[in-house]
Figure 1 (cartoon, rainbow over the protein chains, first blue to last red):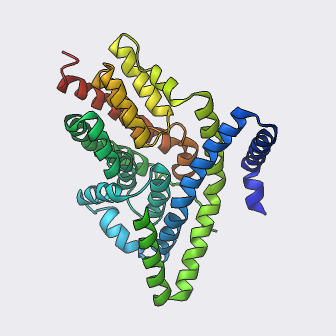
Figure 2: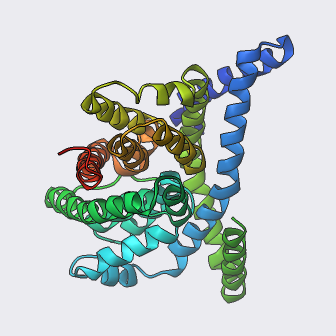
Length: 178
Length: 160
């Protein structure tokens, strides 16, 4: 019940949108149909990936000990933790919408804030299929420059922002742990 | 994509064999986390679908062609920040622009912000990270993109 109240405006918007697209289909209103098609394409794309991602996060939640994550990615874990987070980011599928719930779950197991920030930004930068694509259209020199400049900056910024927010004992919003 | 399904299935099976009750708990957690964020996703997709109709990709790319390369770079940063485009759409278009004489610097500004700064995904990011941290992360991404674009301009001899 509280779920419905909390998401009231999302529900209203969702219904209004559904009615708009449905009416467009009935009336043959072309722009409405196109918008509906775009929505559906993205929706299906997400639906293909997200259930798996959340199941894996759920398993991670019950099986992986907090101490394990804390030891490798938490306070006092050293610079290697950043290498782990970038590597993890490189193999992850999908974009930031997949990386965000993963990062949140890692943080709940006491990963350092800097480490999950590096993971998030790197997951945008180093996706392997995307990189191959980029290089084939813009050349390897272009891709090499991008990696050489962005990766160190990602780690430096993540560490700085992480340290800055940890100092004020920043807490992520709680999500779905009732 | 198939690999993801296989990995998930194998992990789920292994977990089920090891402990059915824990597996149940894992699925409950998975569902709760999913339900907590699903409405935000739907809202984002509604806006993306509307945005894509009113501002098609080709129009966005048209904005990358001002005469001054600094203005073009600024446009690249802006367009990359607001778009949500899969790589298989973005890079072929970048290739096309390159053939038409767009500087590497501009394409770099665009593609780096595309990957690192997400205005459209910000509402979801805020749900996970909170507003302040999301803004800090995206601002850092923007600065990084400027640095990458300038470096690209130097390497390809477009700046000096």
